Amino acid sequence: MDAALRCPCGAGLTFGECCRPVHAGERDAPTAESLMRSRFTAFAVGDETYLLSSWHPSSRPANVGIEPGIRWLRLDIVETVAGGPFDRDGVVEFVAHYRSSEGPGRLRERSRFVRDRAWLYVGGEVTEHGVQH
Image (cartoon, rainbow, N blue to C red; front, side, top):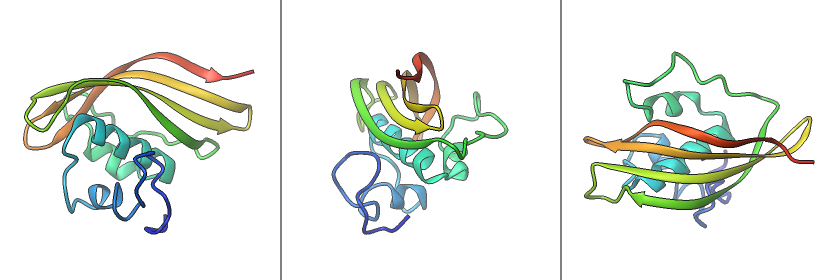
């Protein structure tokens, strides 16, 4: 993705200012929400390597299986609980909007994160997923 384009995560910055440095390992995501945004962007740009590296080893799958037919369009943060720069864990609930060959859809998840040296995704509970009619 071109670094000068608007970052897919919705934070309002360019990709080069926002998620690209996190994906490249130049800096860590400072909060659970910023890690969630960077992971959404990784799905949007197809960066499976980053998705796996930002996943906690205790729950990390062998592969993510990014579906090429899905285009991730927008991320809405619904709620953030803790997950700040001095917290050890946090929760981020989000709605990710996408388009597939079946039409527009939404994925709503309440995700859990932990911070050791850096924030990592642990897992989440999907509460809504599917194409909207």
